[in-house]
Amino acid sequence: MKTKILTHGRILGLLAVIAFGTVSCEDSILHEETNALQPNKVQSGAVPSALSAVCGEQTFDLFAGQSNDVGSVTVANDDENVYVTYSTEGDWTLTETHLYVLDYVPTGRLAPGQAPYKSGIIMGNSFTFTVPIESCGSVVYLQAHASVIKLNQYGEVISSETAYGGDITKPKKGSWFGTIAYYVECCVVEPPVECTWNGETAFGGTTAGEGKAWWFAFDTNGASVQPIYAGQNEVEGAFVSYENGVITIVLGDNLRPNESTEAVKVQGYDVLPSVRPSAGLFTLYKGRDLTISGDGSLYYVIHLDVEVKNCEPILNI
Image: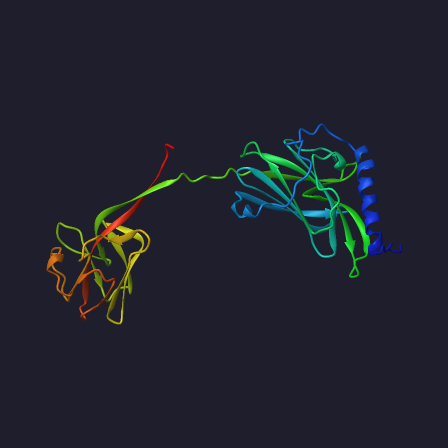
């Protein structure tokens, strides 16, 4: 069979025929009572640029002529809308799209011309419908129809097809169609938080000291990076490193020095004391610097007077 080639100048005529055929022929196909969500919405523009905040997303194949994979239909949602994006690949171009969004499984092809969501005539590789949602945590069923054409390297139309996204059904009677089942995810909205800074004593290192009072020491024969404990709890993102005789204190986002002029106190030991040493008597370093030169000791007691950030959700707003 010889393939019919249309020049670019005849594309608009073809599109008019496609549009007329969609309304006059497809409307005679099985048309169920739709219960379509938001039936008064007739068409939609591009998806908002803030779609990066979607709660859920799935991509389905877009089939032309029942079995030719020509692109995809991507369905996503946030806490307000479902976004349905048609995309074609290669030489295939979208000329028109229609969408039903249902709360039941369709058993036949619904008339594209009567779809509550329709793009009108387009010539492009992508189009998105924005469908408001009333609730989440349930499945919606989409019948995503598209008219597509294939262009050669000269922009000439060499084929036109009907396309559907999702699982393809070929009934014994009636026309083939596609169905997409999409679970509308519920967005988890994090409650606002209130953060406070509370004073604590902190130590850097992993070697637990002896005595009734808790404390830690930094063993230079151990790991080169060791955690910081404040109020006996390890603090995320806070640590002490020791390299080439230099002690570096990193407080991270959850610790900060208190207002004392001697918030950082460091003393070196070759043999650790049997009880927690008095930081006020340290002689190696007292001040606010977070980088301190060591004295060649085997152990360092790194005492920190800090404030710890504590954040709690605000539940009653």
